[in-house]
Length: 287
Image (cartoon, rainbow, N blue to C red):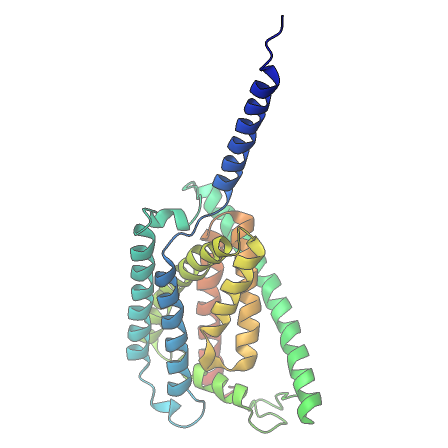
């Protein structure tokens, strides 16, 4: 005779299996890597520094008196503070800072691959951003009924009145290095910024926002990119929009490579080359 409680036992086994499956699925969802208050403080700090930059670099008056070395030093200190704050936050959850950088092989071949991918990424990103910049200026010209500011001659003078974005760009240009000591400090700063900002925006904020949106990678990409753009308020609305897109592209690169190394390479030499290019154009009175 078959035991009369077999259906109940079978149901119990299925229930237990379902509970185990739900528990396993829940464990696969990404969890926050730091307390909510810690991330809120970080976000407020980033926005405060951005607003301070708007106040200090309004574009135009007084920018020629900028002490570049001191500005580089202050920026370096802020980047180190950001790194320290992130380290503090993840350790509150028992997470190592190394895990935020992703899985990276120390082999020479792996480094070369990441460097090559970073070059291709950088070139493609600049092409995309240049297209978006032209679209932005075209739309802006149509709305304001002003011509697109196109340089005329070697002097670099434009066909349109000075716009706030152009004034901000000139203020940023004043921060480009002008001599050997400043170039050396600029290159070191760019390396630090590349590591710090990729760690903060792609390593920390992207993972945190992904967890807050229930594991949606798109949520992490979008919100971290918006924060990246908002962090550069002193460069003007157009630059903030372009940097938001740039930040999203960096986030996609991090997801593709499953680590931050290629992004760090691209970020560091983008800032370095941009600064050196601006310095060269400025020395030739083109910018």
